[in-house]
Amino acid sequence: MSAEFTARPHLQLVQGTPPAAIEVKQLSVRYRNVTALDAVTTSFQPGRLTGVIGPNGAGKSTLIKAMLGLTAAAAGTVSRAGQPLVLQRQQIAYVPQRSQIDWLYPATVWDVVLMGRVQKTGWFRRFSAVSRRKALAALERVGMAEFRDRSIGQLSGGQQQRVFLARSLAQEAEIFCFDEPFVGVDQKTETILFEIFQALAKAGKTVIVVNHDLGESIANFDDLVLLNRSVIAAGPRRQVLNADNLQAAYGGQVNFYAA
Ligand code: ADP
Ligand code: MG
Image 1 (cartoon, rainbow, N blue to C red):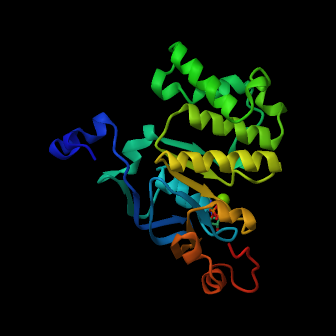
Image 2: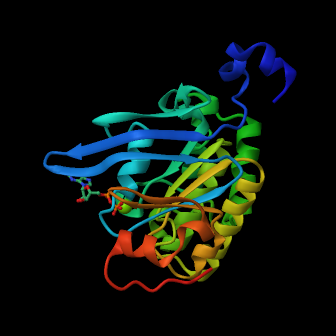
């Protein structure tokens, strides 16, 4: 942290918040008669690739949506650097679960990636040369530049997921949230996604990835949050991945890759 931040902490948000963990405290979410999250307390560290894992219906998507203020919480707080996370939305890139995206949306790949620049540009304003350059660089980084004029609905699941990753890269966020990005994608895409997630973490970003798969790809994560309505375990991957924790989260028999 620079001396300036120490001397003038009130300027932090204006000047760009220095890396700080996301702190989730006693977060509860209820849908009518379902308690989806029950007093969830955990944190997400900058510079770490964190997986949110747990069985179907564990509340993984709900956790992300409640953290971002897209789903109302019944109780609890989510903060970063002492400020509510919802006030830092400009610094968050979010790619929802695939089923929640409108795949008939009549947009080209280029339109979708440029949307990542809207916050920096403003609606109804022309995208600057800088924005166009950054959008193109993001598309190149995910290996989709030659598809820029295709309509998004014509792409395979893996290609679509890479375009949405490109949009989030173009956004130049500090915090990245991806909900089940590996579902229905090819091996090439999975490799590209993990490479970029790890590079983002290495660059000091906070990278949160919901992933219900306990296969060998789990070894790519630095930290894990094992969820089943409440937090079963959270922390460094090796610490979280043990038979007792998995039994508590999944019940019965579960096979996992002992990474
Ligand atoms: P996961 O992402 O881990 O599969 P979700 O967060 O989607 O779990 O769901 C957690 C629980 O909340 C499940 O029981 C699910 O059926 C329920 N749920 C999720 N969204 C809604 C909603 N909009 N209305 C009612 N119940 C919901
Ligand atoms: Mg989900």
